[in-house]
Length: 324
Image 1: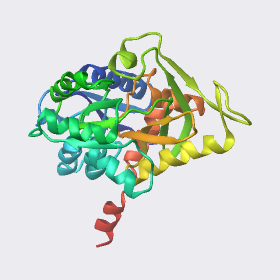
Image 2: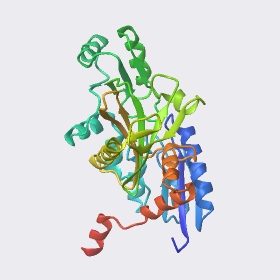
Image 3: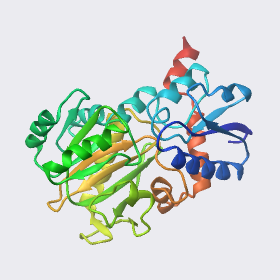
């Protein structure tokens, strides 16, 4: 960016992921201040974000996680103020945030995802059990519209189901019950609409929940290599390419743009399942998207600047408005 731009970094928010968002936002602030940018810190504490109007902002870097960050809410506010912003647009953000609608989109795109059922608020426990019986235990119970693995439970027995449902409903009235797939937990960062190196997540718990993600220091993140054969640190060339291809397919199926992070499972039989797409993944220097970018030779400062640069590109809608 040859000309100095004023970048507002939006962080905080109203979701249970507020503290994670503040960490992401502070890391982005530090990175952007190392470049030729005028950087404004905006901590979001309500849905109005009036502080945006106090500054002459060229672009907003969204480091908000969860509701009003990844669900299209802040994107809609910024569009109403005609402020360019980083990441996916309103419709893609809404679609990715809703775990049921996004899985429906994966199925339409012929992308394999674990069997699942939606559980609306009005459904009683006996009806929930009937739906789970069609999926077969073990299952994972998730709030439909929450991120950072909050409210997620692994259910192995039916007598655990009530507690799992109650826990998920603390974060969203609508919940998703998904078949648990045992296997290698993989994540693929997308940058400039291209896949980054694959990272495997190895946690001590049976699945990657909130504690494993943020509290358990034993959780390992291994950048996998494309190799001739399968190993603990590599995948065969064809399988490696297939994982990246499916991640890109999931990113595109939701209409995401510029960057995201796609979570997948590789089972023992070699089947690949897409779990979800994160439109605003963590942005600390230890987060998974920055780790994948670093493995590609893109440092954290360069990553943040590239994302801002992409946000300032004219969109198809911008070009149409100019030409009309």
